[in-house]
Image (cartoon, protein in one colour):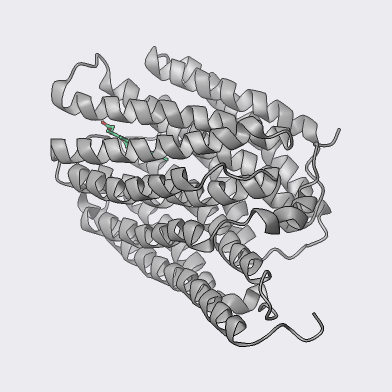
Length: 437
Ligand code: HEM
């Protein structure tokens, strides 16, 4: 059984659905900047990282620099552009995205400040602005999904992700309120539900859906065989609901079953993605796919770690070890791999509309910076996780410094691509059409 649309054909109509580059690139630029500040924030709170197990303060702020500033920011930019390209539908209006951006950037900054200094009203104000931005984004994506008649599997994954986003945001606001009024009978269970829905629901399900489009598109393959993706599509939300139910009713066995179901879903999904990579015409997908593959491995490791955590088998530093694996090992690695692929890809697509011959993808930015970033990222992850596991804070500081250096290389690359793009536009306006065109 094959999926309904071959994503390779999406590329042909993609030009028609390109948004103004300034709209999408601001999200990617912001993600690259927040990425650097995440490592800086970890560096400043290195002494508290390995013992962190929840509650406001610098570590929670650092976590949200990564989850909101890098992950959600990247997803907002990518989904706003890629869903119209993939479905062939236009946004009814770009105003919701503009508004979401103007609420999300300041909202996130205010929220992070409030969390960092444990200042109630500041974190609440920031939380509300951020929540409003995420919900506006979610509704603008839902409007596209509702109208889409193609790409059933990715679209269903995206629906499930948007539903998780709605619930995680509401739970986040409830948790903030509970910091002051303490009305929840079990704050810990709601915090765990927020985390599960944020990481495996909002992020995980959307990434599974997007991968069904992006991996075949970049590998120049057919869509993965539909059956495994369809089974994964049922199992993943069942696992998610069971995991949340398990933490809410405080029953480890239910969470354990959820983890096994989640693992089967993820393995079926990854198997389909590897099928695309093996059968695709483009074999050498470069460094970005090294990160993507490492991200898949760490996704599996994160699920195993979550199971061990639930049964108290990860030791005293269990929550922090799991946090490092899921946030840095899986999501940051995977998303930075995707980001370094779509930034030059979208820049190049926007250039080919012009009259001057566009540069090759590899000429847009110096890929050495990406190699240096990848090495730093890997080293930072290993050093920090090792530091947490051995309850030593110095490796965490060292890892944060290495991570920050890597993030600078990454940001430098993104800026270089944006610069090439601007130079190209300036020059193509000055010169005439390409000869032979
Ligand atoms: C409006 C948006 C959000 C608000 C108001 C919010 C609020 C909160 C709050 C209050 C906590 C603390 C729970 C505790 O007491 O320990 C928390 C934890 C957490 N949140 Fe969010 N959050 C938001 C969005 C997100 C998103 C989008 C993600 C991920 C993509 C995320 C990931 C996490 C993680 C990983 C933790 C765990 C910290 C720990 O280990 O305790 N949050 N969030």
